[in-house]
Length: 262
Ligand code: T3D
Image (cartoon, rainbow, N blue to C red; front, side, top):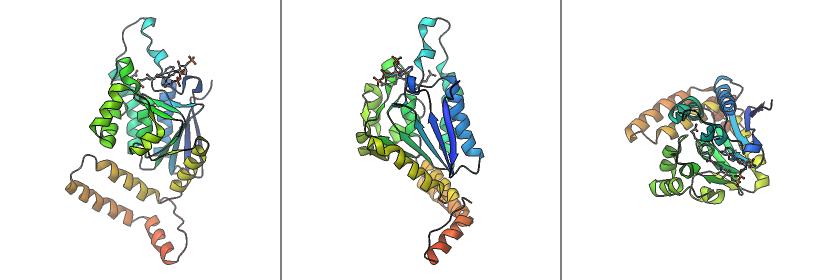
């Protein structure tokens, strides 16, 4: 059987490649479990200092495999609240709570939950030919996989509502102009750029980068007072790290720092 998610670790970067190209990498149960296992490994393995998520073939991810939801096959209607709780939400929580950078290279169409998993990552690069489709309303569903939260927070209500109600494809260049993603790049530059970015992050001060991620995410819901307290606590922790000592020493010695991720 083919692996539905390819995983490889090199130079601190765990690359996870969604691998059901004939279905534009739509999620079946096996792919859900494999992706979740990949992000769990990123949590557990100190050798992993950054994650790179991408898709095999011409698509990034077309969301749920609708072949597995075919009403014509009969039987009771599935409880989709339960499928979110069982399959999508744990992965979303693992991505957001991972205190290591997650780079997403959107190599082609990202639809439904596929689009929303991409935008939940920390730094999103997309090929210029890629597009983001909030496909849910076309089949009578609502935006999930954190989409209603992230789209609204990043874009504001007018654009979040138009994208989700109309389900019109959003080209990568517009997604970048709107600040939904970091960058749209030439198709052939996507993987080289994403790999270089992930490698640079993996060579960085992992603890400080993880705390930074925690802070930026917390700012969405914290008051200024709460955020100032959190900055104080995180800076205290960062200030005790070996990487901070190395960073300052390297600066004073006018050389490149060699961060160990501690
Ligand atoms: O169910 C739950 O657990 C709740 C959670 C839901 C989360 C969700 O993600 S709901 C949203 C599900 N996704 C969609 O509705 C997107 C459906 N796909 C599309 O709208 C289009 O395929 C795309 C816009 C993504 C791409 O269009 P295009 O023209 O580039 O490609 P295509 O020809 O439509 O698709 C290529 C093949 O992939 C095709 O198969 P074939 O005809 O070559 O054998 C197509 O059927 C297959 N495919 C694409 N998306 C899915 C899919 N097969 C199963 N499920 C899919 N989602």
